[in-house]
Structure formats: structure tokens, C-alpha cells
Length: 124
Image 1 (spheres, rainbow, N blue to C red):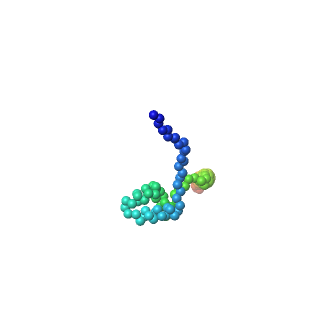
Image 2 (tube, rainbow, N blue to C red; image 1 turned 180 degrees about the vertical axis):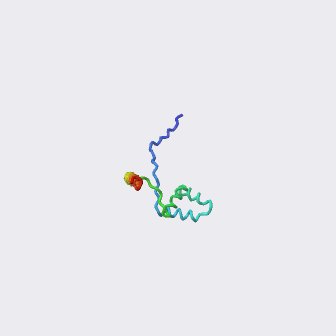
Image 3 (cartoon, helix red, strand yellow; image 1 turned 90 degrees about the vertical axis):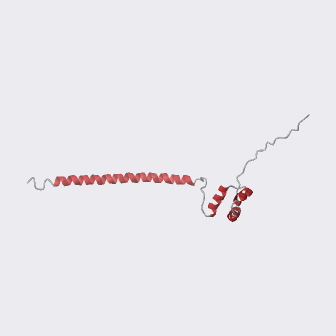
């Protein structure tokens, strides 16, 4: 007795991210909005969608944007941020120096005032 040998497929299937057109998204969202309670799940299963996709599409339709992956612009913003931090540190140092100079001037004025007061009438 010989058994039939079934050939095994060695082909690898690579999953691809599905992309949906704007018209398709609007059509599905409109259909979901008109659906009665309990029908939304049926629509999602029929279309092979997840509820999270509907949520993202609603934000998209209302004009809100979802955060996107970094495209290099974030690095420019980071460089600008670091430059602003350096400038802020320099300005803080400059402010501390100016405040210290004011304190020094106040103390010098106070010392001069003390020297002038005792010599008003006690030495004569």
C-alpha cells in the first residue's frame, strides 16, 4: 500500500498593508452612521475592518490628523530645541551677572552712606 505524497508549498506569502481610498473611507463611515445598533459589527466583518480603523477615519474626516512616523522634520525641531536651550542658558547667566552687579552696587552705596553719616557732626 502506497500513500499519496502531497507536495508542500514553499512559497512565502508576505502580508501587505492595505490602503484605503478617501472615497472608500467616506462610504464606509456613512454606512456605519446610518447603521442600526448591532449592524456596525456586521459591516466591519463584511469589510474586514477593525473598529480602531473607524475611529482613525473619523478623526481624519473631521480634520484632525493622527501622528505620523518621523520623516526627519522631528530632527530639525530637535536641533532648534537644543539651540534654544543653549540660548536660554546664556541669557540666564547674563541675568544672574546683571543681578549680581545690582546687588554689588547696592552694597557699595550702603557702605558709602555709612561713611558719610558718622562724619556729619561728631568729629567737629
